[in-house]
Amino acid sequence: MTVLSPDLTVTAVAAELPGAAELFRQKGINFCCGGKIPLSEAAPKAGLTTEGLLAELQALADAAGRDAPEETPALIDHILNRYHDTHRTELEWLIPLAQKVERVHGDHEEAPLGLTEALIALHDDLDAHMAKEEHILFPLMLQGADPMLLHPIAQMRYEHDSAADLLTRVEHAAHGLALPVGACGSWSALYTGLRKFSEDLVAHMHLENTVLFARFEANPA
Image (cartoon, rainbow, N blue to C red; front, side, top):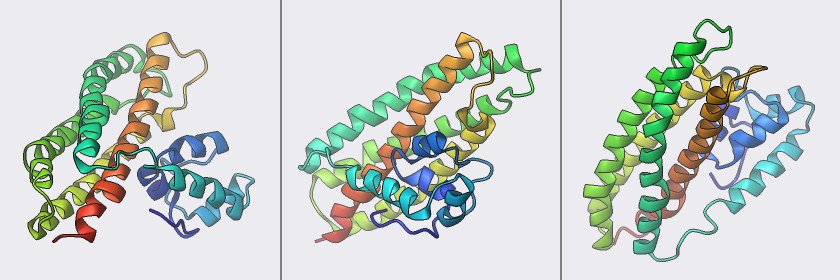
């Protein structure tokens, strides 16, 4: 996503653009349940101009991937270490923490019911997806450009869309990560961790889609 259009939905931008979800939170724009509206409609509802919101989002888009390593082997190492390893580590503690919050606060009107189930689904989806990249796609990329890479890249893009849908499901179960008044330490830690995880996952997929994959699609050899 290089040039942003006012016709894009809030949900789509939040799922694809690093930093957009947090910006929407700050502006009071619902990108979870009520996010299937265009930016041109969401901006005035939040007391903003469409042009102003687009400018802030465009600044995020221009900055995304700017610090990515130039060489493909270094970029792949960066993705593996910064994102693959981190996602696995964080999900290992986020899932049991979600289970605890649901168990202890299940009768609270703002309890994140269904969050554990949504996180497990996302964990399983990501685990399979990252394994394909680590064992098939990335080793092939390290051998150089090849037209045969276009099909697995297309499949990875499709799976990114599936992961984005599952991430939206997580945000929905957690009520947009809005903490209720008087939330306990575990609940606060859960939502803080989820916010960081969500931003990381969006940045990860954006980096692959717009930088790594694009390199091989532009020059399949």
